[in-house]
Length: 202
Image 1: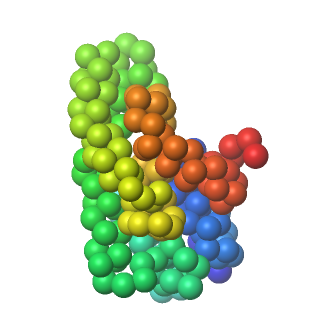
Image 2: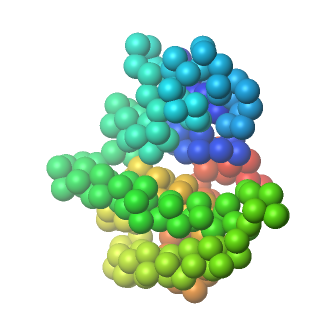
Image 3: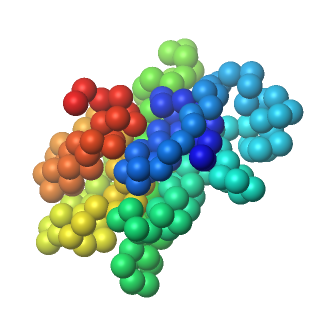
C-alpha cells in the first residue's frame, strides 16, 4: 500500500484525488505543512524540501504533487487517467507543466495576499495583479475547450486533474467569466473522487 504524507487542505489533496480516481489503496500519514513534523530529521530524509506531499511506494520516495500524480496515473494506466498514445502523453506533460509554470504561481500569489498571509503582510495590489495575469491563462483554457470537453480530448485524464486541482479556487480567481472553462472545472471537481478528496458536499 502506498503512503501519502500530508493533509487534505494542502497540495496533498492532488495525489489523494489521483489515488481515489484510480482506486488505489493508500495510507494517509497526517503531516501538516506548517507543523514541526515536516522539519524533523525523519521527514526530511524523505523530503528534503520539508514540504508536503510525499509519496512512498515501496522503495520509491517521490515529492512534488504533480509529479506524484503523473507517476500514479502512468503506473496504473489501466485506471484511465493516462494517455492512449504518445501524442496524448505529450499533451499530459504539456498541461501539467502549464499548470506548474503558468497557473500555479499566480494562483498562489493571489491566495497568499488574500487569505494565507497574516493581514498585516498582505498586499492587495499583488492579489489584483495576479488576477489580471490569470485572465490570459483562463483565455487559453477557454480556447482549448471550445471543441472538446477535456484538455487532451474527449475524456478526463490526469492533465485535467492536475490543472483543475491547481486552479481549485477557479471561481474566486475570476473563472466565472469563462463559460467553457467554468463548465469544465465543474465537471472535474464534481467527480466522485474529487468530492471525496476535497471533502466537498456530495
